Length: 426
Image (cartoon, rainbow, N blue to C red; front, side, top):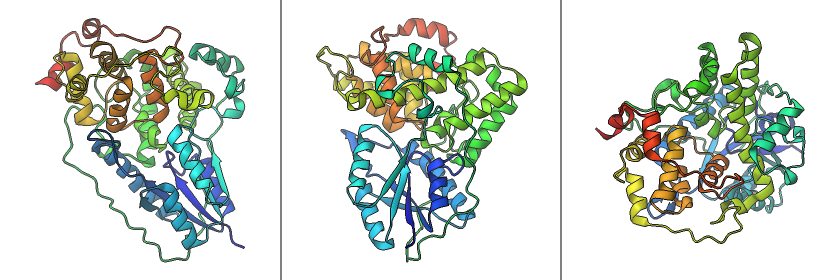
């Protein structure tokens, strides 16, 4: 009996350092690579879950994945709708004997996995989105430290060495011998280009996809930018002020493990400093937001987060709409919100400032802000988005209880000459 496998890509749109896909390629007689586009429903009023910037960057990444698969004599089948229903239909057509995909432990993705397992076809899932592997952690995830600093110290004390990446498959099994239509709409909008974008994803070198992700990493190392990262990371605009790994990481076009591996090689060759360490530090924050889901799960998505106080979270729709449109009357906030709406990107510093303003100055529900970021950000990551909003709202694991930013102080410190504000408000 042939092993006929459906490999369902999720947030791992790559072939290199993709343990799950490598296993599927080695153990299958027939392999069907699949990507399912969920229904892009409104998540709040007329806000689409996946806005135009995210749609475009995803389209670019899928185009590159499709090209890469074709170069290995395979292809990518794209479908739309309920993932369980689609897999059920396809399984019946091709006689699938196994389904393999990346494990994602946020609530909706967990529900999807349960539904797929209910089909009765053997399912294998692989955890592969963190820098550090679960089996190398010096604690059980259910009992991990709540506070990041304690988590980090335990990790550092163990001196974990990030493993080398898994190789590309040497060859891929054939596609199913069935009449399957592999064509997809590979075009993406080109009318969105904005001259001030800090991540200009419509320019060729910033397109979504594995090829661009790997090239960007190598170019970043070639310019020796890891040595200056900490000095520039809080700037508000520009292509080189931060690593810009996050958009590609969000779709899994490159793995966090491989980035950490290459940074370590860079340090071995050119020397380590506080800035190069800080890239690892930020990747560790990313891991932390993932691992904390193993401990708290759906509670991270409740109105009051991890707080035991049954706080009444208010929401002012009028203020929320002003925030979205960049019409609050606060120039720094409005500049940031216009940048986000026009480009799908915002510096980490501005994300914190506008999030704080929504919660503490406009008295709005933090969850609505998280939904807007989900819709707009090209580097949206379910774990980090939820973790960071809880952090600002004081409803996560941070013992200091929230982060209210003084916009006047932030203005003076990060945009003293009004360059950023003029860029977006004029």
